[in-house]
Image 1: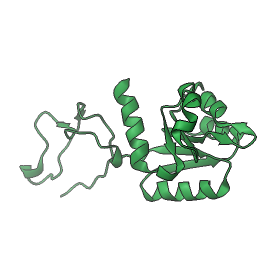
Image 2: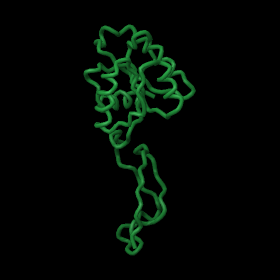
Image 3: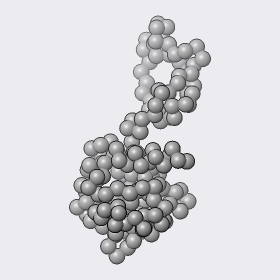
Image 4: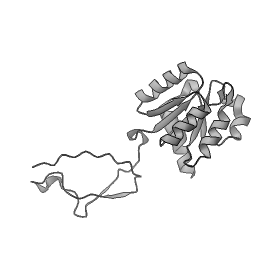
Length: 171
């Protein structure tokens, strides 16, 4: 008889994962190696993992469009917020892989939200977003704890993964 099982593992390529059992209990043709260990593929691919994301922006239309776009691209948008208090409440109640924070939140500063998220008990990597060009914000960005910046017009899962992967390589 065949044993049906489904598992999703997100591990670095160098990891060795111990597995017990066999894919086919009748035939040894599909058995795992005698050691019971299987190696992850040679390259970890962020696209196979659903990153958990928070989007913070005071523009309701942009929040909706950004959420829809990123979800279509395989990201799990666990929350959207238009104020710092909403953003911090979502971050405190849910494990996040990244927060996308608009630099200009109307009456509030996105940089203050970025600092609060980055300095929280469970720090969240922040990518600042804006309709303004990066060159116009360079001084503000240099003083922020953000891992990167994305113009709103270039928002995509691939760009987010690229910034987060660059950060992980620097660490």
